[in-house]
Length: 443
Image (cartoon, rainbow, N blue to C red; front, top):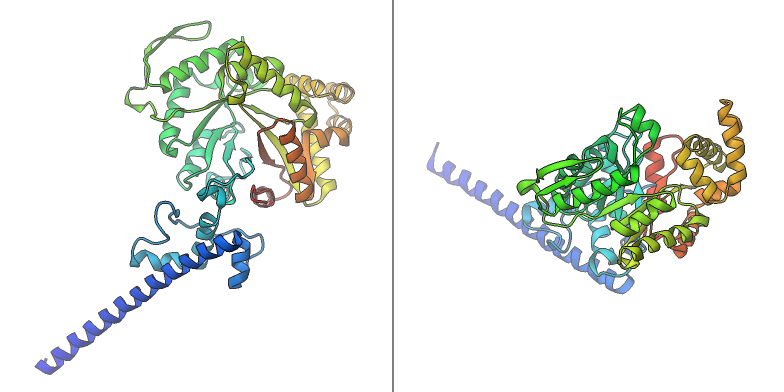
């Protein structure tokens, strides 16, 4: 090749490199200008939605950003280097960054109503579906995500999947049944989740129910309160890094420990409770209580039981968190929702624990009629016994505004952490997505 041709070739190559470098420099500058504008709008208007209107950025139906991976503002101001900038200046990434940078509760510590969300363990929701919903819940400002166990699905796997794609939302088992695991295995699972989540794990424990424990797990359902107390004592010791020896009614343990796997952060323990005894035990031993079918009429009484348990143990009742699942159906076909809700309550009424709980909440006549129908094998008649008054106490059905008002009434009654449990009609994942979005803490 002639010398002049070689020189021209390298001149062109150098020119291309310089053009590319200049392009990256301009894009980087644009990124810094963009984030500066974000903070200016936030300071003056304080709203992610007003910002979108200022720049006329369209919102897709449902207002759900595509899941992407970005850094939070307290870690890095929008970009680290020029090569990451192009990825951050995509539509989905910009909207996700806006949710984080303009969320007053996340960045400035401004007060935001506490809400949790519970995902079903229905097989139609895959671990990846739950992961996607968990990312959405975090971006919408939910404080906690809870995963129950049952139906062939364990809760730790679902929560681990969510932990890998989230950074702030706390992750709780709602609940781990204590008869299905030894106390040592429970502590090992909790330590693993604490590590995977970076200290965001909450260990929810409960006794379960006799038909499930004896039928599915093949374990005698004996002395549930004593077993739960022993489990909590052993698990707390192991998670604290202690070497535990215990001789009790249910566990005889000699020098058990987690070794170097004990978490550095304290793992909060919540107790699943329905009746007075479990509620008082939560006040005595737990960091929080997690109720189910949280009836508005029963909350004040439940809080008093927790308070009584705390005072017996010499604890400050205000240190115990009061959380509870609240079934929510925001929007949609109300008739279809109520028909499905009646059936679900009737099925729960076939369980002695829940039937007694429904009586405790003031629905004795409904339970007598439902019990007679169930004894005859007539679920349809049992469903008809579930009145609308009972439905409105046990669940929240209506427009998003009506549902939010109902949750706030429960909060005023003493439910510190309402946990939204989407009541799915039709496509399960879509129902979860719509309910989570409609009931987002930011309103």
